[in-house]
Amino acid sequence: MNRVVRGSDGRLWTVRSSLEWSNPIAGDDFEHDVNGGAGPAILMFGVLLVLATTFVLWTPPGVYVPIWLILALIAIALFFPVRWLLHRPWTIIAETPGEEEHQPERWVGVQRGFLNVRQETAKIARQIELYAEPDMNGSLQPTE
View 1 (cartoon, rainbow, N blue to C red):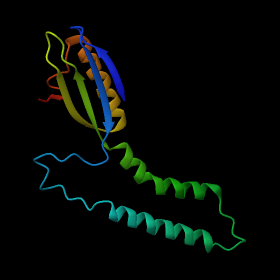
View 2: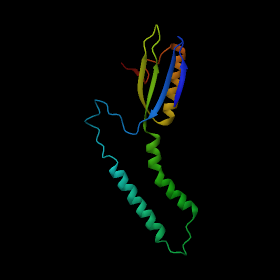
View 3: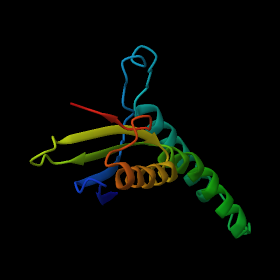
View 4: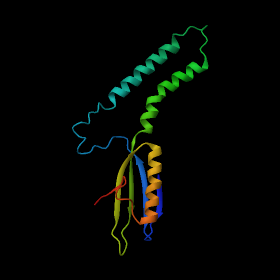
């Protein structure tokens, strides 16, 4: 998501957000962040695929399987991957290039969840329009 915002002082800010596929590790979280990697997820997906294929191939020809059962099994299988995707962290960046009287600025923050990111981006854009920079007490912090 990209958005160009004109601040109250006339500077143009670019507010953008991007999906992070891996969790950003903070200094405090380093020792506690234990991640098994993608291996266990791939193994479980393979087992699920083998079980679903076996279920379909071993069904006798005279058995009627209702469509709602198939849809329920698909919904159950997709619940956790969709939940994982919707709760990924997003990096939000607000930056402005340097001009004659102003130094370039870059503000960075992390927000979880697609809907939260949209709301936070709109709030940051509004703060820039009103006060010429993001809120110091908000989710973004200035970087060097």
